[in-house]
Image (cartoon, rainbow, N blue to C red; front, side, top):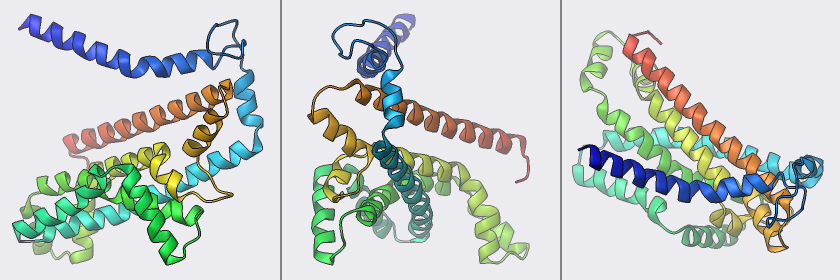
Length: 267
């Protein structure tokens, strides 16, 4: 038993090293005064200064954050409504069909989704830019929110709803005072997952981004094609740290919510 546990620990350690070694390599050389990734000559914050002095890059960062927050908020609302609608479907076959259609956007290759959105926006006459990127991010984020919320809805006992109705609550009160507080961890999970996906997405955004508008992932790709620059390392490091903070924030909120539920504190 101990040997199997130690073997599993070693296996996990190797996997994490493989996954995180390139990231730490990138972070390490973002502080290299030598200007390359071949020999570390000294510590410097020069490239971080270049990032913050680049006005165009700061606008792109703002665009990325606005797109991520807006798409996450809208997709969370739509995803919660979609999960509630799927949960209310009585036919098991119809419910499974809806779930299958919901999962198509998650398992489909990003290249196919991006090309499909490009064709759709072109046919609809929607100019590629902020609107097209926002709509596409909402579209691929909604299924993620649905998958995060549905398990919490399935955990909820129907007796809670019946008790609320017996006490005189109308439909809106049942939704806002019983259902939403119960599924709040799933809502937070869906929002932060959608936020992370939006911040990290490249393939879909690359297809639907027009002239004059860009996001960080597309900008990093464009700069990397021009040659190695440690400002890309610095920018990627900042994005990585921001993503880590978002994930930690989600777990903190989820843990806090679980503790409150366990203590029976009214919300």
